[in-house]
Amino acid sequence: MNRKPKIVILGAGYGGMMTASKLQKANAHHDAEITLVNKHNYHYQTTWLHEPAAGTLHHDRTRMRIDSVIDTNKIHFIKDSVTEIKGEEKKVLLASGELEYDYLVIGLGSEPETFGIPGVEKNAFSIRSVNSVRLIREHIEYMFASYNNEEEKNEGYLAFIVAGAGFTGIEFVGELSERIPELCEEYDIDREKVKIYSVEAAPTALPGFDEELVNYAVNLLESRGVEFKISTPIKEVTENGVVLEDGEEINASTVVWTTGVRGNSVLEKSGFETMRGRVKVEKDLRVPGYDNVFIIGDCAIIINEEINRPYPPTAQIAMQQADTCAKNLRALLAGKEQLAAFKPDIKGTVASLGGKEAVGLVGSKKLYGTSASAMKKVIDNRYLFMLGGMPLLLKKGKFNIF
Ligand code: FAD
Ligand code: NAD
Image (cartoon, rainbow, N blue to C red; front, side, top):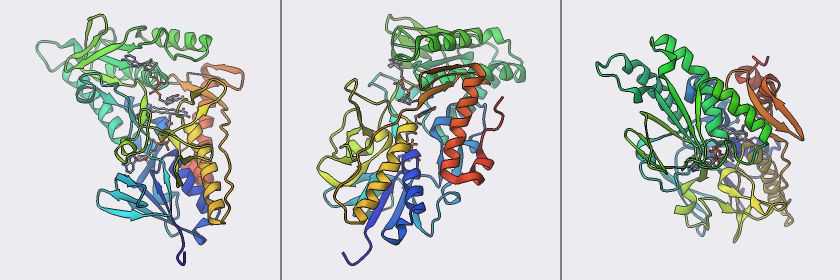
């Protein structure tokens, strides 16, 4: 090849941004032409989105312009939507053009898992992007504002259903339960009138998480007025709320759908073999059959061999994969054939519960309340530091730690 090889990175989330940043720091632009493609000109922290969704944090705190972190003289940036990947032709189709690549990194993140349940796409909100959470926050406020303007009161305006009590659902319920008293005050509404339901199909909230931590979270949220409906699958979402498996209907004008995620639909559309939209990658993160295509983050499946099940998709794993992916790209540029295997190093899980409350398991240590909440902020700040050093941390960090 007489020209520099072309590396194209799709998606500027945790995986894509960290891969680009690591290649930039390693001066890989001397050896390759590197292009990052993202549908917005900003990067947002998906892990913070439950906060702007409830309105407890402004959405601008969760996002930053890509060119404020990535040097676009070294890494080209294209703001566009990926529509399809043509693996055989080494091409990516964009909404307004196409790109050729020698090496491709796919980090397009996830989409809400609806399990084909009727009415979800039409009637429920989801926590997936800055656009989607801005809509949730505005809708919640509109419901509060509307309530006292109607002669005949619609109690559904003040009922909020969160479908799924996994980590996203619980973190959102935590924020919402903190915000409700403020909204009641602002819109002259009696707190007793407002209902928050956390509806979970499994026999417990936060299935698979430590029982003591789950109990702490549930008790705390109940004390803030959240009503849990456990072992209660939702079978339909209507314009007026949800229908539960046993036929009971809950009247609510707001349903937020947090029942898990699947890989970005671009992968299925592009003909990759997928499971719930995700591709099972090789140990070096390449796609079976494509030795020039890496998939990282929520689009990739990697198996936890201890239990022979996929690791849950997390930012923690996406960032660690970015590290391995950047190293492997550099190895390929240097003409090496032996690539590094990805080994996740799971440091723990911390779930925020709104305000200064959280629960977490870090190593074998259980954390509750303010210490868990402080740990969560340290984790959020650590990411900012890793991505953009002290300037980004000072600009976007969370410093109200205790
Ligand atoms: P993302 O970070 O979602 O990035 C995907 C990027 O691709 C986005 O910038 C998007 O705009 C872009 N994109 C998508 N489609 C296209 C397209 N067609 N064309 C161009 N660009 C496109 N994980 C943790 O480890 N810890 C946590 O505390 C945690 N908290 C979470 C809280 C919430 C509310 C949610 C929803 C998730 C949380 N997660 C957490 C999970 C974590 O956010 C994801 O696992 C992580 O974001 C995956 O990183 P990614 O790079 O694969 O995708
Ligand atoms: P999840 O799969 O963790 O939880 C979804 C929940 O929805 C499950 O408990 C499931 O039983 C329930 N559910 C499924 N169908 C249902 C139905 N019809 N009715 C009612 N409940 C139903 O998904 P998530 O919470 O969206 O999280 C996605 C990923 O992001 C996970 O890997 C998670 O670990 C990660 N995440 C991590 C954190 C954190 O570390 N703090 C926070 C948020 C998300």
